Figure (cartoon, rainbow over the protein chains, first blue to last red):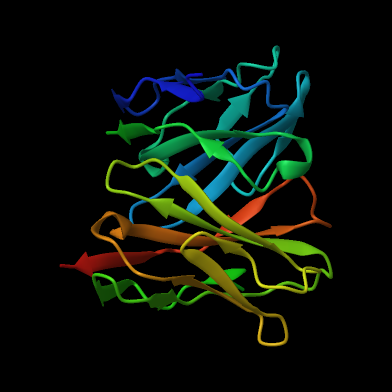
Length: 113
Length: 116
């Protein structure tokens, strides 16, 4: 069991560039989440999904898009990168009623310059 | 208004001693959940403990216990017999059931340092 995997680990983007952060889980979890963690702060929810084909906005969705075509994958898309999106991005997953017990990936450190 | 407040940016504890990390929350929901996560320097988030708003007893998981005081809206984490490996950031979080979606609101964290 690899758990939740994220790629890449690090990335530097120029302003206006686009990229996709990949997230995959092999635990057959139906719920998946994307968070961002700014320096010295807690995590904030960007988007979440309760199952394949279903996504919804979290607390800070602006500037991001997601899709969930399979149970395993939940990619996060940044269309026009801005310096305010410099952050560490965490993907997480959980199962049904135990949604409070979220399993996190190792994170992607993104810098936009 | 902040939904989760952690007022201790940093805490120090002697190895083998107990330590309490403070967390207060703000919600008008009757049904909610409170969690603690640990983030070591390696960066991953590790789930520690959960307390539901209707749970009458304080949650415990090994050396971790959650001191839940509903009237005060506090959910402090108690770590007993601290170990060097407990040095990490600790985040308190809350899930409001009515807002749905398993949205977790996180506090700003407390950095715990265990001194040998």
